[in-house]
Image 1 (spheres, rainbow, N blue to C red):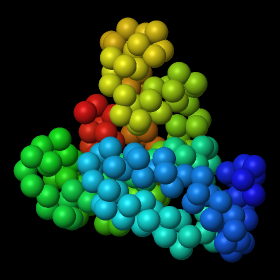
Image 2 (image 1 turned 90 degrees about the vertical axis):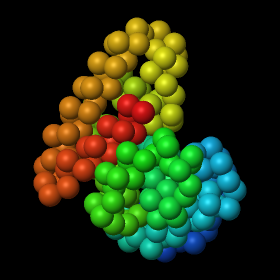
Image 3 (image 1 turned 30 degrees about the vertical axis):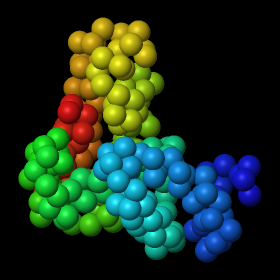
Image 4 (image 1 turned 180 degrees about the horizontal axis):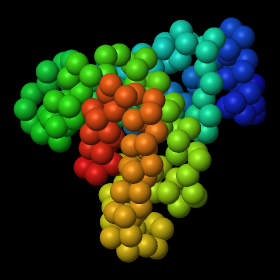
Length: 197
């Protein structure tokens, strides 16, 4: 099973294949845990978040239709779950400093991890349709690389990277406004905070 592609594993999982799910879990658990831990600074909360993501994935297996790289989808779920964690746990002011704007925006607007996963799926599909450079910029920024680091990695001027980020947001704004007319302003504010902070 280890050599099976992600999309093939997802097809098996949709048909209740527990071995395929275990393979997917083993493949991504450590990477997602490290990503959550880097944002939270603690093992227990990071483990809880990743566990919850996999539980939801299994619960939604019958209607899974993830287009694009599965890891991007899962990493997006980690990012959004971390924001939710800060909001729900009311952590101390020092930890909230970097996330406070996102928390205020998110309050009462994205109600559950299922909403997060749905939004991340929408974003993944939209980004997959973008030109290669916009895709790269989005992926690198989503991995918490700074504008300067992205510019260095891709050999671009920092202003060019900022322009690309603005173009990614412009395109995502259109998609999100169509799919989430009642919440698109909130979702765009969250997305802008994730890409610009």
